Length: 390
Ligand SMILES: Cc1ncc(COP(=O)(O)O)c(C=O)c1O
Image 1: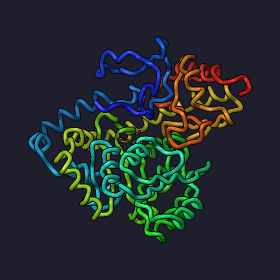
Image 2: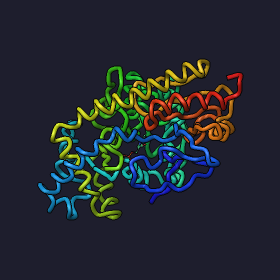
Image 3: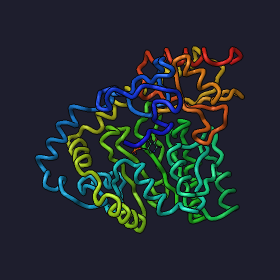
Image 4: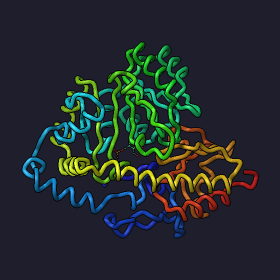
C-alpha cells in the first residue's frame, strides 16, 4: 500500500491508531492526535456519499459479462479502446492521442520520468504537492512561478522563459487549482498559450476538477485554445470515484507513443476492468446525472465552509472557489506550521501552505470529504486555535 502524502493523508504528523480496516466505508473519517479525534480538512477526497457504489457494481458486472474475455486479458498499454474513443470524442481529438492510466498521477510519473530528469520544470507556486515530490525525486530543477487571484501570472512565465535553461515543460492546474482553488482567467489562458507557442514550450494542463463546478460558466481549456497543442490530463477520480483509478491524457502523438512504451515496461496493460466499468457507466448515460449530484454534495460543503469562515474568522483572507475541493487561507504573518499542532490539539487539521511551495503563513482547507456539521465544528476549532488578534 503506498504511503499517503500530506495532500490526502489523514495527518502528516502526530500519532493515530491504524485504521481498523482499509475496506470499511469511512476508514479515515477521523484521525487521532494524542488520542483526540480530529476533523480533517487535509483530505482531498470525495465524501463517501459522492461515490455511486450500486451503479458501479452493476456496471462492473455488465462490463464483465459483455466483454470479459477482452478486459480480463492483456490489452493495449494505452487503455480500453471504447473508453479511449469516448474520451477522444469529448475532446474532439484522434483516439490515438488518448492515453489512459491507473489514475492521472501515474501518467504524470510516466511523463516526468521521460522529460524531467536533470531538467528545469516550471510550476505554479503554490502547486499540488505530489508532482513536486515526484519532480524532486527525479532530480528536476523546479521553478515555481508567481500566481495571484487570477492564477499564474503570464509575466512571470515570460520572464522565466527568457531567463535560464529551456524548461522541459510547464505543469499547470488552471481550474479550481489544488491547493488554492483559484481559476486562471480566460485572458491569461490565451496569453499562456501564445507564450508557449512562441517559446516552443510543452504545457501540461492538469484538469481533474474542471467539471466539479458549482457556479459560473466553464472557461475554455488550454487544450482547446491551443488547437490541440497542449498536453492535457484529467481523471474520473472526482467525477465518478478515485478508487476506480482511471485517469487520462491527451498528448501529442509522438509523446503518446513514448508513454506507451513506458506503460508497457511498467505494467503491460493498465487495469481494464476499471476502465470498462467507467465505459459502461458513461454509456448508460449516468455520467452527467452523477456529476450533477456530486456538484450538489460538494458545493454544499463549499458553501458551509465559506459561511463558517465568514462567521468565525471574518478578517481572514480566503479564496472563494466556484468549484473543486479546496480553498486557500492567508494568515497575515502567522506561521501555519506553528498553528498546525495547536489546531490538531484543538481537534482539526489542514495542510500547511509550505507543503505546496506556498508562503509560511498560508494553508489549504479541503471541504470535499467532511460533513456539513464537521465543517462548522472544525472551522470553530480552527478559529479557537488561532491567536486572538486574528
Ligand atoms: C491536481 C491533481 N492532479 C492529479 C490528481 C490525481 O488524480 P488521480 O486520482 O487521477 O491520480 C489529483 C488528486 O488529488 C490532483 O489534485
